[in-house]
Length: 333
Length: 293
Image (cartoon, rainbow over all chains, first blue to last red; front, side):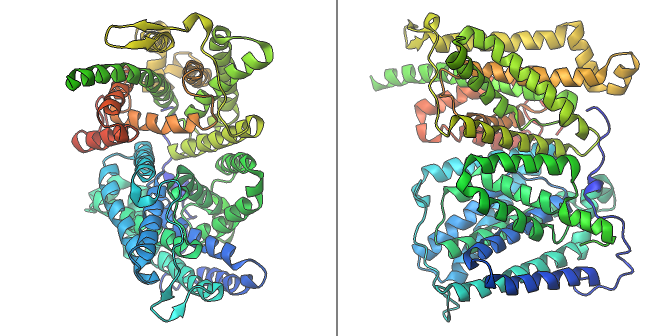
């Protein structure tokens, strides 16, 4: 190594007067204001944009929050979140299409399955740190991809198609895009609020202590590996939750959901939005999914531009859009 | 006796597996050298492997330069690209958290793969085996295509040569010293920044040699880099960081294991290396040859 690498602190928000600012459920006035703006956008955007496209964004916001909890607040870089996304998508699709479960139970089974897989993968991967951790998670996810390609359960190249949307709690008919949209709108707002609450809870404080200095956290009596694992499992389960919702919206779970592109996409979303921020996953999902939406007709150009965005943000704009904003506003967003 | 047949199949699959093992060894060797000195996991390593194959293809199609010329020129071109990449991009990240190096090279991999797909299309392209290496040798238990035999022999020689350069020459001594303590080596008047640039270039040029050698075996395909680099990451994890010889042996050994699985339980051949990684992590978390976790 050429020089002592700086600790991941430059990912962190500027040292702020967080302690003296009044908080309610983890919301400072600044974060509450941002949350209200987001809620307003969620409420008004279906007037101008396709609800299906917006719902896809919301699924990825949840996925990106799950990822940022791990990378931004625990300091663990996973390159294998496609495994949890894919696992959630397949099990939810299987539960709804073949077991005939109602959507809430199908989503629940996808979430639990991804969480269990996260427990196993986390238990294996946490044995190594830093870059090895990233390589292990990537390899484990690729293993899942090959398994998904081979076993009959996933439907191979066809995937699980025709997943019914069904009736939420037996009452709300989700086959109408309007009903599904408002269901997802409520869910995504709740998840962002929950994510903010987790980050600003005592548990979140411990995670950040581990991120900033694992040895110090250990010397203070924190069971570092245990906390890392819990954070990993929460992140995996949340990813499975996001994927399950996506399966309900689009009615399909396929190999795309478990391919390495999904893992890189969620990294890119958080890099652009802001690693270690609350609203980074939100902003990043809007930006990256819009980019993909408009570039997808041009095939490989999307890959080239994604790569260039990666390079540009790593070199000149590491703190991301929201990270840059919070530096200006001197408040953790 | 069907069992007899199986033994033959097993051994011939292992010999063929050794071909893949050679590619794993060449790639993980380059990754290990780059990581050792630069502290960067080069996600773009697979893409440089792929570039080697594509440049050889282009040399043949546009200028009629065949395999042997390609084997020399393609790595040189990739090495030059490597120099540019290190100076323009990677150099700016040394003082930061290592994960940014991974992110940057990931972006680089996506961009180069996208560019290749735009220029050459999405399909794989054929690259003929050079005339001098066509045909096959009969080893008694199997008929081995001459080209594959060449890849195994040349690949292993290349790895051993690299290992000798690093362990036994003054240049290698400087490299190892700079890996241990760059500030001290700089104080002795060695230009460490230039050394970093050249190390990166040498590492990716090595990957390009592998790519040219792979071109007649795999089709020249934009996805060939990403597919192989993930397996190589698993190989690096199994071998453990920090041992040059370890990464060569692990690469070859896992190629053998993969070939063996192809003969015994073909469905698992694409996953066996990952399963081996899990087993090693559980039993020996720092890897077979690793010094630290």
